[in-house]
Image (cartoon, rainbow, N blue to C red; front, top):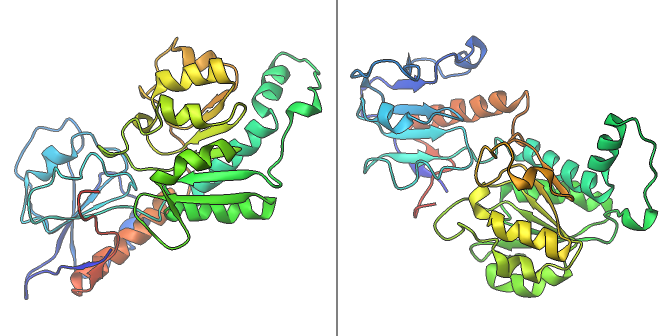
Length: 317
């Protein structure tokens, strides 16, 4: 969604950016704006002055407190696609824009990596290598994507990137969206889709409606041996229900996010057979900040010129 918002005539545009922003990223910002650096976490609180455009870094737990000390904020631009920590919590009148598009490539690559690793038993091969053991599994347990049905729950920009990568492998894609769109199915269709799925990819944002969306009922409809891939938020999946489904029904899981997160030492999920866990790194690639600052620079240019902003969050999330 787009929305027009602009500085008042003759008003300087003050933009606040995260500390330690590299000079090469600062150089991407349009000329004529006054750039300020947000205080580091832990610095004593103080009034920060005007700031019509504020950039929220990927991870900043105290951002809302810092934002309250900036005057006349018009726009908050996040670098994260997930905005559950901001949605519905900003002062009235502030336009919130998310980081949709920044992470499409990296997260989609992770999803494909995780699917192929689990279908071909790569975690066990890595474990065998660490033990210096040459062990050939039964080929009946190895799978490929040719003809496989992949359900993508949360078919947005990342979902489209996942589909583009999976189609050349011969996979059949079922697209599920929260709101009706041409060529997609809705959540009400999942009971019929899940029993047919070889892989279910979760890319849903965390909202009150999606919290624990993947529950015991959802998992009971997946066929034994199917793979659940979660690259969204940990609280979208009921961890206890997932562990039970893995033990009792032979489901597999590839998780970049967990609940709780970080996953504590000794948690039973760590040692469950058929589970791959990475520590919320699907979007963490070298070029993530470059993509993020390209979006920030374009959004700031649009703001200065009174053009519609991209990625405007409306109706909650």
